[in-house]
Length: 116
Image (cartoon, rainbow, N blue to C red; front, side):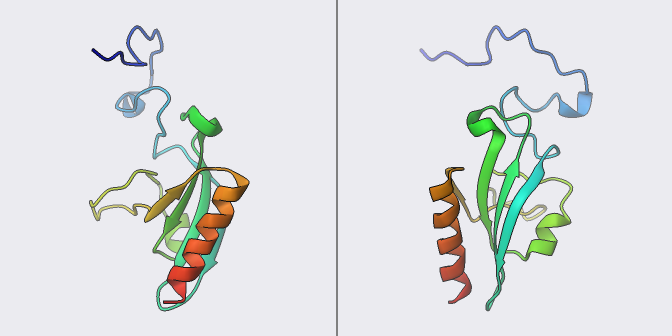
């Protein structure tokens, strides 16, 4: 029998648009890109570090690699850090631990993919 970390929570979300998101998980509508790096090539690969204030692990920081140009990522009003095959929004190709080493490895991957 498993226990939900959200059972017994007294937290309430007053904005109905945010009610679908569980407390502690990233809300794709509430994010801020803190740094990014694009690797142009046969297709653009971009590394993005974003902060989701609603997410609790790693202070809400996520490092993601996208097979999209930086301008397309900045144009998003929602940025879901989860993998998804729904083409209605951009989904990351990969995610890395939001640490200095995670940033370096994410950049290495994007650089390799852009050079292919």
